[in-house]
Length: 125
Image (cartoon, rainbow, N blue to C red):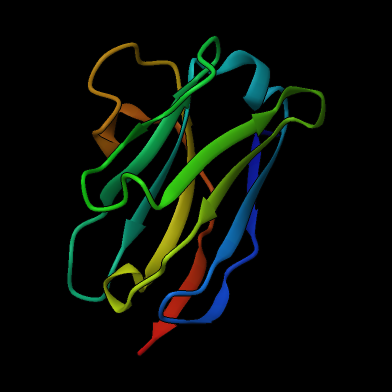
């Protein structure tokens, strides 16, 4: 069974930091071309945050988080991370980890095959 499980969400003050983890099983990490993070705020669509490919050492970022968020991976642990710094209230959302095999349109949620259940991030002013 393919599983993605997010953790690390919670409450943070504006300007603070959180680190999210996405633990994978069922060979998801090794067999997927891209791992990504998306987020969904209340009443809004699920938006791209960042993604990293199997062979890349760096990620692609949404303009809204570039310079503040960093995606990374630990291949031995089949885990992907999202380090979030300088948080602001607009970062409040449910954050989802995703895995897929697409080589294009990786900013689109429709390109991903597997999803975690999400973890809530709430930033207070």
